[in-house]
Figure 1 (cartoon, rainbow, N blue to C red):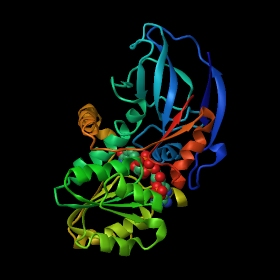
Figure 2: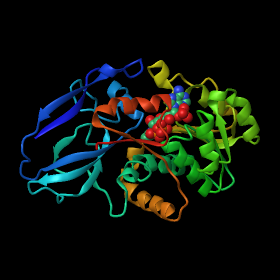
Figure 3: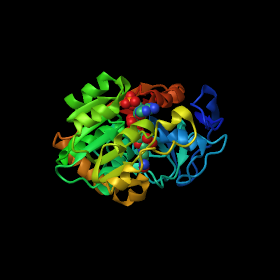
Figure 4: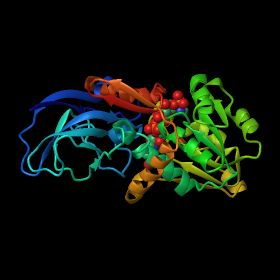
Length: 332
Ligand SMILES: NC(=O)c1ccc[n+]([C@@H]2O[C@H](COP(=O)([O-])OP(=O)(O)OC[C@H]3O[C@@H](n4cnc5c(N)ncnc54)[C@H](OP(=O)(O)O)[C@@H]3O)[C@@H](O)[C@H]2O)c1
């Protein structure tokens, strides 16, 4: 059995992603050994953290070496089994990487539950939904009446955070790039206010939208937008550090916030998190998100590109804001 795979070819440290960072190869897989299944990748899911994994900037995941299959989440289908864990036809989700086919014993992969669309399992019911839920409820701890500011608000994670905060009884302000994304936030996702950071002067717009200040800041972006949000925190605020995608413009780690001293004046707390720390709770959180979806209380967008050969270009879409919601790639 031949399969194409994308392999890491260079560590993109201190610079944007480039075409040569990954290389496409064709390799031959042996027949499944006893206990193994042959999995066919049906969809890939994309996350800005993948660039960080390619760079090896963090230690919460194993380092990636040149020549490794690109790490990433996927939905795979069991197409053959040699006494493996799941029958042929089962859909599985997990970190199986950028390969069209692979051999696996099934350990660490989740069965896509009955009635759940595969795309949802990679987005709102996958790590994206878990990140939104855990960052907001476990770190931000919203109370009805709070004002919440979300950066990267129209993205896969941010759009869920805002809707969950609305359900928790908060006033929600989103910051996103462009008029179209801002219109989606207020018209579909139910945000109370949307601020287009590309139109300039986020600080003044935040002042107008949150005159009393923000009780929770949920930051996906870092950089100058985080500084502007820190300038608007209310006394006792919780600043949730989820991601820092703006750092990829300049490379390296994000610059520290220059406005951090407002944490002292406002007796505020700033806390980062890694969603995987709550993995034991994911099934229960997934059930709660499913109940909200079934009740028609949560919307989400999936941006589906096509063709395995387009995987690197699809990853790059996240860093220029081309994606509309969760970035996926279908292997047709
Ligand atoms: N802590 C954790 O455990 C954890 C887990 C998963 C994800 N995350 C983080 O969560 C964040 C969101 O991930 P996602 O998968 O939901 O991606 P996403 O928000 O769907 O996509 C990334 C978005 O970032 C925005 N962006 C890109 N460059 C920017 C810049 N220079 N300044 C401001 N905004 C910029 C773009 O939106 P605009 O068009 O609005 O600019 C783009 O659409 C990421 O930082 C990710 O690493 C953290």
